[in-house]
Amino acid sequence: MTPSPLLAAPPSALVARLAPLHAAMTHWRHALHAHPELAHQEHATAALVARVLGEAGLAVTQGVGGTGVVATVHGREAGGASLGLRADMDALAVREAASRPHASCQPGVMHACGHDGHVAMLLGAACHLARTRAFAGTVQCVFQPAEEGAGGADAMIADGLFERFPMERVFSLHTWPDLPAGAFAVHDGPVMAACDAFTVTIQGRGAHAAQPQRAVDPVLVAGHLITATQSLISRGTDPFESAVVSITRVEAGQAFNVIPDTARLEGSMRCLSEGARERLRRDLARLVEQGAAAFGATASVSFRSVARVTANTPAEAALAARVAGEVVGPAQVARTLAPSMTAEDFGSFLAHRPGAYVWLGQGAGEDPPALHQPTFDFNDAVLGLGAAWWVGLVEAALPEGKG
Ligand SMILES: [Zn+2]
Ligand SMILES: [Zn+2]
Image (cartoon, rainbow, N blue to C red; front, side, top):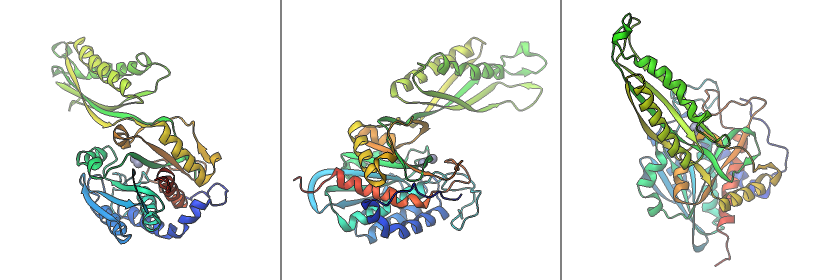
């Protein structure tokens, strides 16, 4: 893709301070893009992160929640306050469909969600903070594995992240191709949806395809359940609430002339509150069990929690937006965008600590490649903006001279 120019604006003082690190951030970003690693396998990525942070003179802990890395930065002034800054490290099982000098060397694996850029920006900020330390208190730079639906946040938390590396507030950012490069978006409340994966197993009775009277046809039951699940949204959900149920996989039978015994459906449910999540789970289970029973079959549903709701807390959202305004100008900070129904496991961090998760625009042209697409690439032009936001956030949240 052709990176779009940044929105025309002179660089802020914060961005200018990070300018000397732009070449290094671009170099790290390209190295990470060329060598992507799937969830829980981010060994080379973690090694690069640990090497850069170690060379910056920071105390680095590896192996947190698997391949996670945490680096601690102490401010010039001691202080009780602490902040967690989080970047995600994993790539996706996507085959890159673009020839670029830093294209993936790993067939079928690609940084199609911009996590290469997230790591590079937080590394740049950490290196700057390690040198300037113009804050009071402690900053934990958290490099998280396995964000893409594989439980990396929960793995780090289960490994004692918050106890071993105290942090009172937590922040993260994600690149957002639908926003222009040089813009931020900060939400009050939900940013990304809760997501549950589910599997429906239908047990019927097989028979010859010509003798349906001897069968309890699980394929017919599956068809009715696929249609009926949409009533959970259209009839069961407040029209002013957002929720999605998608059936994405259907599996049954092996031959054109045999009614099978069983059928399986898989899909995902997304919504913007834990209350709606509980209700959708309960109602889907009831619909599956009783819907199948109406045809003489039995069915059950099992759920796998993929992500909690990612919801910003008001004070931290306001702080994040104020700092974004200092980086790109307040007019470039969107405060009223609708949330996305995609999921993000930073919601697990926000379930434990107040904080905010912001979007950093990187759009390129009329129709920029979307996240998770084989032509996606992080826009290097915004590396300095993200790093400047991190540094500004630390200095605003942990100001000197207050003790
Ligand atoms: Zn993603
Ligand atoms: Zn992502």
